[in-house]
Structures are given as structure tokens and as C-alpha cells.
Length: 285
Image (cartoon, rainbow, N blue to C red; front, top):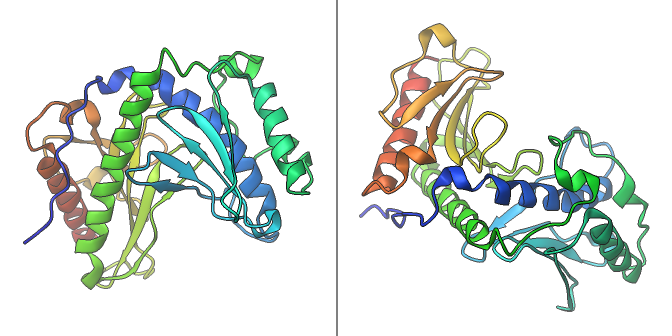
């Protein structure tokens, strides 16, 4: 019998999560700097993905061999950065009341303890974030946003569960399924499916499935399906009622969280959105 994800009904409206999302987004850039600048040179990737740990409400880096197996992470509900080495020793920093300068000092001390150069913390990333008061050394606020941070973590758990289920049910008719990773550039969780049967002449047709906590286009979490190469806007198929087409900069089908919020059996509606959009898009190849 098919295993369905747990129904999710949030206690905070999705459109009220933007402030929490921006705090998490900025905090994760410290992990992104370390990952990016400690990665092997010669990579053609412009960022290094992070991992979401389901049901533990945290983002983590992969273990960095250069740092004696140390890995860094961010506990989302409490907005706490941590570093853990291969002996299990944990070093933490609650971001409430801290500025970006304070985080720089803490990260520098952790790296020094691991006998690693701290200049990577000042190196730029290959992308930039929208302007925010934290850029002017304002302080993080994990107290007033505590409920929203917990809610955001629940959306990530829910998104991860949905994506994992879609991976499992597509295993038999795909030739490649990527792991679920988080992009520090936009905080989205994404997995990529490459199907055996496609009419795409390039032979490189893929489908990106994902969850976004929100971005410059939408101030709330949403789920998305992106066919690559992009589908032609004039030939886009009809979507289930919870879905809409986004055609600004990219072509993707999205399902906004506000359309799922407080709807009974929203997991079944969301899975139907993904399945139908995957199938209808593949049929156009």
C-alpha cells in the first residue's frame, strides 16, 4: 500500500513567514562561504549545496576533511549555528541578539581552533542576496520570530517528505535521481529526475522537483516542477487547481502554500499536482 506523507496544517499563515525566512537565508550564507571556499578547486558549480536533516529541523554541511571532519549547521527553530567535529564536540552560537560581525568573530574562533585559515569567511560568494537590515549590522531576532521559525522548519520537513516520496515512486522508470539538496542561494530543496522514456532529441531532458520557502517573486513557501529544457510558454498544459504557471525568468509550475493551507488532505492534492505536472510535461517532449 502506498505510503502517504503526514498531513500538514500549519499554525501560522504562510505569508507571515518572510521575516523568519530572511534570517535563515542570511545565517546560512556563513555555511555557504565555508563550503564554497573549502571545496576542491576546479568545480564548475557556483555554489555548494547543504543538506536538510528531516525531523531534526536543521541544515548541515557535509563533513569538511580539511577541517578535521568538522561540519557546521543551523538549527532553524532556535536560530542556532553549531560546529561539530569528529569527536562529537559541539560548539554553538544562538543568533538571537547577534549581528553579522558577532557571527564572524564566532566562526573565526571555531576555524582557528581547527587550525584553519579564517580568510575564507571574508571571501565573496558568486551571488548576492537582496538587501536586508542585517547588512547594516542589525541584530538577529529569534524571540519575536520563534513561532515563525518553528513553522518554517515544519514546511521544510513537509517539503522533504513529499520530495522523498516522489523519488521513491519514480525509481523504476528513471535512469537518474539526484539526492535532495538545499541551495544556499535561494534556500530551495530540489531533486532532479531524468526519465528513460522521453522524446527530447537532446536526450538530456530532466525534471526538477522542489520546495522553496519563498523568494523575490512569492513571499510564501511554494512547491515547483521545472521541466528542462523549459517547456514552451505557448504550449503549457493545464494544471490542477492548486497550481499556476510561473514564466518570469524561468518556466515552472508552482503550488503556493496559501492554496494548501488548512485544506484537508492537502498532501494528496500536492502529490496529484506533482504527478500530473510531471506526466503532462513529459508528454510534450
